[in-house]
Image (cartoon, rainbow, N blue to C red; front, top):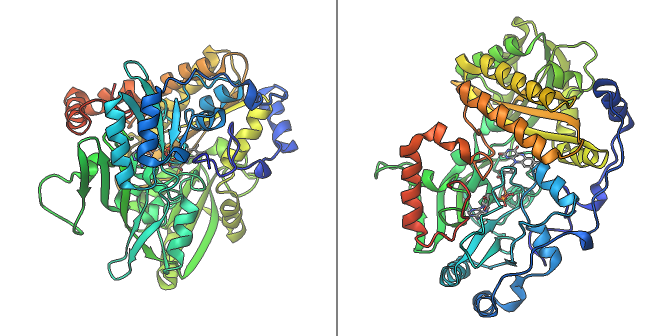
Length: 529
Ligand SMILES: Cc1cc2nc3c(=O)[nH]c(=O)nc-3n(C[C@H](O)[C@H](O)[C@H](O)COP(=O)(O)OP(=O)(O)OC[C@H]3O[C@@H](n4cnc5c(N)ncnc54)[C@H](O)[C@@H]3O)c2cc1C
C-alpha cells in the first residue's frame, strides 16, 4: 500500500481503466472555436520523473519507523511522486512533464490518532515538516509545503484511518476517520439508513479530513449546505497535544473554536476524527433541466428562490458560453440561452411541493422546461470533469477552473469583471481561449461563481496560467468577491489573504499557529506565509 493511490494514475485522475480519449466532437469544436488543432502530449514515464534526493536522516527514519512500524514509512520513487503536490492543472502539467521536485522525502501512514501524535513528536524533534495528505486533490497548492529551514518533508497520509467510527442514529450524527473517501463514507452511512449529502466533483477521491481542512462545498450545497455546516465536532492532533471540539448541538461557551480548525489546511494540526450531522436517505430523487434567456436574469431568479426559502437540493446555472459548449448538463444547447439544473432529494412530500413552487416561479420568469432527461444527463456526468481534463491535457489543451463568491448586489459586476480580466490576460499572452462560468452554490445573500478556462497549452503553460490567474484574482478582490469560496487558500491564494482578512486577521491566525505548532513543522508556507 503506497497510501492515497488506490490504483490511480500518478499523473492524472482516476484509474487507468477510467481513462477516456477526447471525444471527436470536442476536438472539432476546439478547432472551430479556438482555431487550433489537438496534438498528442502524453505524460513521461514514471522512471523519467525528476525527484530530489531523499533528505531523511537514518536516525529520523528509524524514529518514525519506531512509532508506526517500518512497513508504513515509504521513500520509494512511486510513493514520493504520488504525494507530490495536488491535482490542479498546473500540478498535473508539471508531473506529466516529469517535474516532481516538490516531492516529500518520505510518506508515512499512521493507523490512529495516537500514532499521529507520536509522529508529530518525532517530526518536531528532527525538524521535519509534516504535510497532512488526504485524497491529494488540492487545487491551490495546499500540499506543496515550503522546505526551507527544515531537515526534510514528510507526507502524512491518512489512508489507513478510514473507518466510519460510529453512528448515533437518535441524534443523526456520524463519527468518521479522516481518511474516509466520499464513496466509502456514503456507502457505510447507507447501511444505517443515512447519507451525508456532500458531493464535490472530487468526491470519488477526496477525504473527510480534506473536506474539513479546506471547507469544501459540494454540488448539493443549495439543499444540504457546505461541509463546514455539517461538522459538529472535530479532534485535532497537534504538536502540543490533542484538541477536542464540539460537545453539544449549540453552545455559548465563547467563540466557536471549531471554526478555527475548519479551513486550517493542515497548518494547525492533523484532523484525526470528524463528527458529522447526517440525514436520512432520500425517499425520492428527481432532477430536471430548464432553459432561461440570459445568465444575469437567471441568476436573479436563483436569488428569489434563495430569499423565499425555496431552494431545491441542487441548483446549477451555466452561463451562455458554458451552455453553448454543452457543459450545462442538459445536452447540446441548440436553442441558446442558459441551462439550469435543478435537483430535489428528500422526503417525497417535500420534493413534490417544492418542485411545484419552484416550477411555477421559473415559468413565470420565462424559463422553458427541458424535462427529466436533461437532469438525468447531468447526474450521469456529474463527476466526469476531471476525466475530460486529462483527455484535454493529452491532446495539448489546457483546462483550469477558479472560483469566488459575492453578495447578490455585487454579483453581476463580479462576473463581468472576472470574465473580462481572464479574457484580457489570455489576449496579452496571445492565447486563444474560452471562458465559461456557472453558479452552483446559492445563498439568500449571494452566490458563488465558478469559471472554467480552456485554451491550447502552447509553451510555458504553468507560467502563463500564473499570470492569468493573478489577473483574475485581482478582479475578484476589486469586485468585492472572496478569493476562494471553497477551494481554500493553500499557497496559491495566500498572497491575497491579507486583502480579505486584513493584517489583524493574519496576526490572529499566526498566534493560533504559534500556540498549536510552536516549532512551525505543520504545513509550513500553506495558509500562512
Ligand atoms: C477535479 C477536482 C474537482 C474538485 N471539486 C471540488 C468541489 O466540487 N468542491 C470543493 O470544495 N473542492 C473541490 N476540489 C478541491 C478538493 O477536492 C477539495 O479541497 C477537497 O476538500 C480536498 O480533499 P482531500 O482529501 O483531497 O485533501 P488533500 O488535497 O489531501 O488536502 C487538502 C489540504 O488539507 C490538508 N489536509 C488533508 N487532510 C487533512 C487532515 N486530516 N488534517 C489536517 N489537514 C488535512 C492538506 O495538508 C492540504 O493543505 C476539487 C478538486 C479537483 C482536483
